[in-house]
Image (cartoon, rainbow, N blue to C red; front, side, top):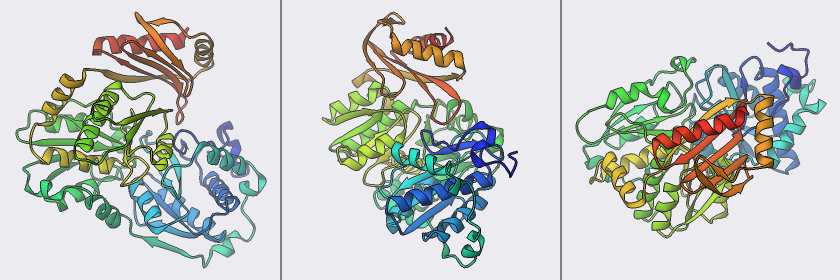
Length: 481
């Protein structure tokens, strides 16, 4: 616990710092009520410097303390002249962002630690364009949070917030109406599709399943009730955390979709009827193929450096422009805003379609997968098999290692002198846009420091599962040298 007499940037020896997607830390250690107030004051200062005024939409997920953080933020922002609007109850991040854009608000602030383990809390800040803040804005907010004016409350702050203009707003119904207006609901209503949805005790519960039921789809929801401990694991829809969903659909008859969303429902994962988790690259390839075939992607797509090449091959077959960017959806959001592409996706289950929004949205992804399967034709497994037969197979994966001094030194040494061959393959291209990315003849190896946790991550793509595992271990070994 941080001593209240300490300045907020003394907690755990760490200043308030925004990573790949917002600021996160251990609740009541790094992420305390006073440090939250400090960060909110800094956001208010940044908005004022940017000559931005108007409403700020504030929301929170199902983690402990979210409602209190949101209430404090609303009072602070209102005292500084911003019309604070707090979403009712725990809501998905995409719903809060939609509320911001539909209301013409100046910003949105969501208290969520997304897919991180239960002991974490966090805060995401979105600009009026609908994307999470860019690096320059984050660095300025960090700098403001370190200044004395942000590290202490104004003496009259409590008095000035007593009658502040703070109101709650409903965000779920307008958000779902927006999504469902762009989905083929006739196909959903007339199909025999069944959906099993794993909400992972998180903010997507009662949102994706509600949208599907209102569209006439039979839905079974798993882990719908809020749980501060998320059942004892991180609300991260990866294979290791989806055993319940995999068991629920394994060998079930009929047309079936199994899907999960993460802690704030901006990421998604899909499980086949055989109980196998689709790689994020495969899921994105299926989505982009469906959207291009139905005329909803015409210009191009943006993907992260760690996304597998199957997505590129599918895009090329549809004549679509492809851009690759560093890991972090903020880079993809900026590309969507530019108008050069219509959709974006990343290796960790993030997906966005510009006509709906510019940040990732797991609820939207779930609805689009349901639409795709409801239209009839091949099953999910048959679609994936056909896609691989047309465009080839690639297998992607990642692992994490501790970000200690030795590992950081090893990464620096590799970056200074990259290898010419790796895992028996020639290194065709080396890029440093986000860590070290080695493009190989049959895939890639990427090494980078995590933007949300004290870890180094190893990403790889290979032609088959055996080579993928070997390549990941090669990456781990390189960081251990």
